[in-house]
Length: 473
Ligand code: BYC
Ligand code: FE
Ligand code: FE
Image (tube, rainbow, N blue to C red; front, side, top):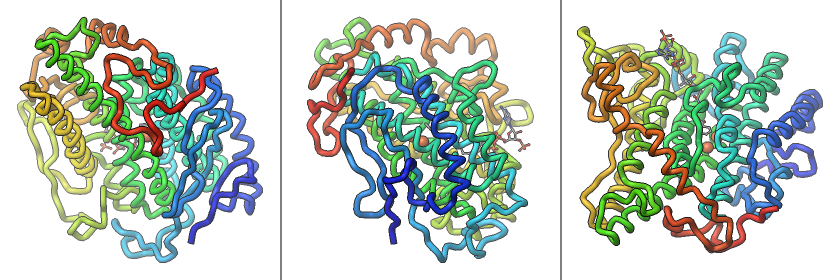
């Protein structure tokens, strides 16, 4: 059975908020802080309204409605996927016991930390994308940016709900801190590295939504397995929205590659810098950067934290119930990335539990490869011999076994001087970034599109590309 959202309330929800006055008051006093954060850190481009999807329900027969809404009036709501009353814990030492509706005291600190880390990324991405509206390549893209932004705002609401409903005063303090830290700040930065990087141009935005939102997909997938049922149900619903974010990234990069390939063929040259499109080597450098910083988001290659999370039932594996093992892993092993005794790039066998970050990172890497295959098919179909590739897992890492060394995208270990000398060939240089930024001339006219990107194959919700997706003010 589905509980429909109650839209008569200030905060749309399917969690019977009206039954809990204390929680309702906590959320209602947080709401103005959220709105002032949105005003100062959310999308900077003034708009009248935007054609947005709003979550209104969680059932199978339609969970969202579309319509033009002023962004500030977006109904950020709290939605949990439908409850399975008989749900059992699927892994760890509590496997087979009923899932928890409340936070067990012994796991309170760990669960709070997982929810805070997840919650911190959501507003961070909105902050990172704040200025992109000014250079949107089309109204269609502008609308997609804003859709992603409002939904990341809703994901923040989702985590704040869990904190305020289940963690008492600590939870309320953490909810305030989520609005206090800010992306790139020196005094109080966001918790994870990738969320303090800039997203200064639309190529970065597509790379971010492809690679970094995809980390979100995998992390949410593991939290969806959690024994703490409210977290599980929250993440399950967030994953529905996440699919669109990744579609924006996948097709965004498709369209950049397609347009570059077109101009390469038309002009019969590889050297398209100056022809108004992004050269393939620059696309590769952006890919290298966003992929490597996203690999860092999975944490250390070995981690006692993740072993404890798993054993306690807080965080599972990707598609836990499809794994053919005992779902406890106490006697199992896994090969993880590691430096050899003489400091070379290699692998080492460790207990499966402490290698779970590696397990998840590998699922992610395989998924990332599917995008690269897609973009390479676009190049092949254009008759071009060039190909894009994921760099080696040791390339440009700041977290894990390879954080102390440098490596080429091919996986050759490099000394610090050689790295300094050659890194400009692999990561975006100031010249590359300036060139990409020079292409970012706004196209805010209905039905028009910037010259550096191909139009999308489909519009949104069955609307054509030249629909009036955004009304600027
Ligand atoms: N160098 O790395 P840790 C999204 C050690 S995105 C070397 O903390 P953990 C979104 C550390 O001491 C999804 N070592 O990993 C996307 C420890 O050692 P021990 C966000 C380091 O805790 C786009 C070991 O490494 N969600 O939603 O296992 C737009 C491992 O510790 C370093 C989540 O991330 C270093 N620099 O996992 C919007 C989910 N640093 O104890 C949104 C929630 C640490 O083994 N978070 N160490 O000796 C988590 O699940 C986990 O906190 C993390 C880290 C996966 C992030
Ligand atoms: Fe999100
Ligand atoms: Fe997302």
